[in-house]
Length: 246
Image (cartoon, rainbow, N blue to C red; front, side, top):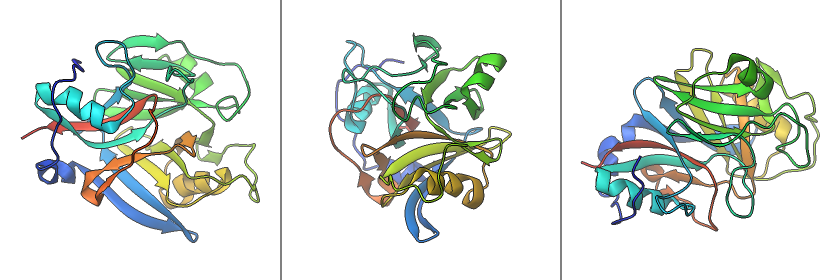
C-alpha cells in the first residue's frame, strides 16, 4: 500500500460509507462501552504502522492523508497492539504480507507477557484471533497480523490469570472474532474496567469464542459515524476499515 502523505482526507463523505461498520454505545453489567462490528467478508480491514519514509503514522488523521491519493479513507480505526517508545511493535507484526517483527512466544513483563497472549490475523474474507501457540502451530498466511496480549477469551474460556475482583481498572480496548472468522467485533470501554469484566464482555455479552486485548490507558477510537476521533500522543500499530473516498 502507498501511504504517501499528500493531502488531508475529508470526512464529508464518510456518512455514505459508515453503514459498512456498525458502531454503537452499549452497556454490560453497568459499564459503558463503544462497540464496532465489522463483516470481514465484505469490508477491507487493514493494519497501519509506518509511512513511506519509515516514520510512524501514529494518528488517524495521518492515515487518512496517506490514503487520500489512493482515493480511499478510514471509516473506522483503533490502536491495535503494544509498542516500544519508538512505536515499533512489541510482538509479531505483518503488513501487506511483509513481516516487520517476528513472533514472540516467551513470557515477559507487562500485559503483553502475561501468557497466553495472541495474534490478530487478517486474511482474504476473514479475520481471526489466535492464541499464540495455536498461531505458531497453524502458521496461517496472514495478509496483516498484530500480536498483543493477554488473550481475553480462549476457545470460550477467560484467561486463567484474570481475577473477578481485580482492582486494576483502566480504559481498555480489544477485538474478538467468531469461529468462522466473518464477524469481527472491536470494543473500547468508556470507563475503567478490569481484565475479568472486559473478557466477559466479549464472551458473555458479544458471544465470541476468542478475543485479544490491545491496550489500556492509551486506548483510542476513530468512529466518525459516532462523531468520535480520539487524539493524543503518537500510536504504534493501528487497525482500520478502509472504503472508497467517493
